[in-house]
Structures are given as structure tokens and as C-alpha cells.
Amino acid sequence: MNRPAKPAAVMIVGGTEAPAEAPDVLGRFVELCGGPAAPIVVLTAASTVPDEVWDAYRPAFAAAGARACQALHVRTRDDASAPATVAKLAEARGIFISGGDQKRLMALVGGTPLHDAIRTGVRQQGICIGGTSAGASALGVHMVTEGRAEFSPEKGAVAMGAGLGLLAQCIIDQHFSQRHRINRLLTLVAANPDLAGIGVDEDTALVLAPDGAIDVVGPGAVTLVDGRHLQTNLADVGAGHIPLMLDVRVHVLPTGTALARPPDVLLPLLQPVLAALNH
Image 1 (cartoon, rainbow, N blue to C red):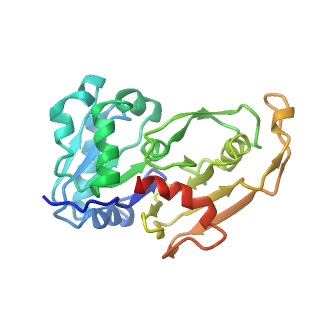
Image 2 (image 1 turned 135 degrees about the horizontal axis):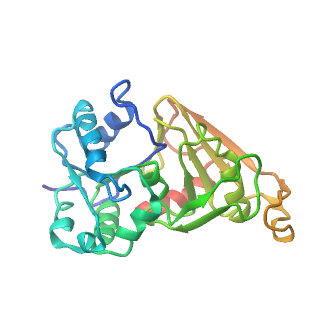
């Protein structure tokens, strides 16, 4: 199958898609991949119960119109290095990464031939990439690994690690409104003000296209935290303390948002994020 030699869209899903009630998110993913006949693989490496995950996604993708969807189970790093595993991406037009534990996903896939094939496929061969919950968190160069910060931003309450590296200069959090994670994201941005904070609600997706187009699909919203103008005393307070945070900018993109390019207020924040898709 001939694929365009250019990057494709990225879909960041906040988790807990509801395909039976409203197949907007998975339906849009199928559309981005090229339509019902497009080959799609569902990578279940983040989950300890991959067969159960596939049992849920197989009918969900079928309901969304996908006719050529298959599971890609990776239970060990040897699986992620096996030529047969990598070969499953050869004809794929879409890769959807399930939820589970992003640390497990990176432990199994990070630095393997499968990881290399995913990056090459997305950046050079036009494979559409989507991730939900843990799979969404892992799309960036950096990802959340643990932490809470439920009631206020709190120094040292949240930790980061290395992600798949498909999106630069951002940190992604999911189940955002449902699990009240705004303070968690503020904590991360306070410590890393050069990163765009992206929070995505459940059953909702942020679609980023390499040409700069932005769409929000599903019933929720996407919250962007911009710390580029931040003034903080984080370096001077102890662990567990609330830092001073001045001039933090928060943008909310509700369902139905469709922008041909980021407006001037968002362009400096999102341009570095999108740039990784083109390299």
C-alpha cells in the first residue's frame, strides 16, 4: 500500500471512550487513518490484560466503521524487538495505543525496533497515531509517571519520565476534569515552564495536524496551560509546599473547536509541539 511520505495527524484521547453511546472519537480516528478500509493496529502494551482490552476495542472499532483492525500485543521487550511484531506496522495507516500504565508501555516498547518503527511511521510514512489514557500520556518526549497534587500545586508531588517522543515541548494529562487534575498539571508546568501543559477530558480527543489545524472531538474539553510567562519561587520553597505562580495562562478548547491554525495567542505554545511531527 502506498502511503504519503509526510507526517499524519495525532489524536490525544483523555481515556474512557464511549463508543457504544457516541462513537465520535474512534470514528474520527478511523476517518483520519483513511476511512473504513484503512488498516489499523491497536497496541495494548500498556495493559496487564491485553486480551481483555482487545475484546473491548474490537467491537468498538467495528462500530466506528473500521473493517481492517487488528491487535498488536507486546508482553515482553523481546516481542517489541521481533521482526514479526514490527512487520505488523508495514501496511498500517493508523496506530492506536490503549490505556493502562504508561510506565509499563515504555518499559516494554521504549528503545526497541517497534519504538523506532512507530516514530518512523508517524513522521515519514503518514501513519496516524492515537493514544488514550496512558497511551496519550506517552505520546510526548516527556510524560507523567506518578503523582497527585489534588488540592493545590505542590512542589515535588508529580514526577516525569521519558515518553515515546512523538510530540515535543509538552506534557499530557488525561481523565482531566473527571479526576480534577488541573493542580497536577500546574505543578508540572511550574517545574517545567517551557512545556505546554495539555489536559484532555474523558471521551474527548485533541486532534493535532502537522499543518497546524486543531480539533476537539467528543463531549468534553481540552485545557492548555501556558507557563512561558510564569513567575515562580518554586526553586526557593521546600518539597510539599505551594509555590507562587504568577501569570500562568490557561486556555480551554471546548467540544467542537476546529481551528485551521492556532490563533496568535496559542501559536508560540503549540508550534514546538507540532514541529516534532515534521522531523
